Amino acid sequence: MAGHSKWSTIKRKKGEKDNARAKIFTKISREILVCIRENGSADPNVNYRLRDLIAKAKSNNIPGDNIDRLLKKAGGGEKNDYESCTYEGYGPAGIAVLVSCLTDNRNRTAGEMRHYFDKCGGNLGTSGCVSFMFNEKGVAVIDNEDGDIDLETFMEHAIEAGADDYTFHEEDGVIEVYTAPNAAGETGAALTERGYKVLSAQNEQLPSTYTALDGDTQEEQVKKMTLLLELLEDNDDVQNVWHNWS
Image 1: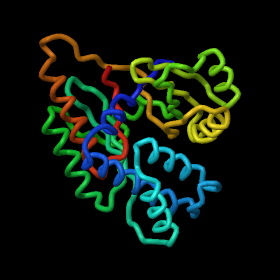
Image 2: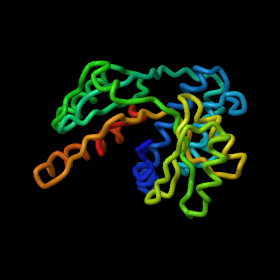
Image 3: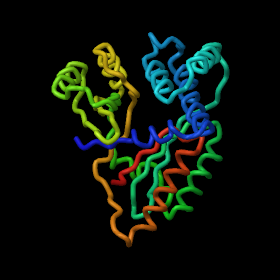
Image 4: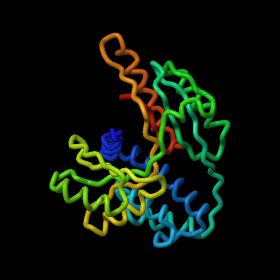
């Protein structure tokens, strides 16, 4: 399986200034609040999705005290009106884009999404217009920044943990492990017990085909697509962005 690593983007975000880190915490906080509301438990030993989100928060350098305060707040039944929604559209050159959001105001979020796509030479589409081009998979990201993981041994451990496949991203210092949907958390937990450092474990939308923007004639489209991704990632309502830009 061809991998689609977002980890270079995540690492860039982790290294940015404090206000960028605050945005990441805002996004993860919403995910945690909704997760606890939907699953009815603030105990990560029972709520496996919550355990994955806590690991995600820690991998983004969010202090443990902040996480503990958030768990107490959510466990205390604090009301939140966030709901999940997905927007689909086309970027420059017909690049397919899926945007997953948690919002307390659908009208506001929809207006912002439409503005971003229009501004960058794309267009916001209707439900189902591009989702058929993606396959949902569980993805666990394993830290290999030091490059000391023996891949043959890792492959054996990953298969025993329930993995379908994996991709090694040398330039990003990670290994992406692919599982069935909703199984990444369990696979990540099994690999953690083996001594591997799991940076994240969640469902992802992986494109079945990719679109390339190459050459001087498409330089402007590259700029517009880059701007679109930056605008989307900077929006507090946006949790994940998937696309088929090669």
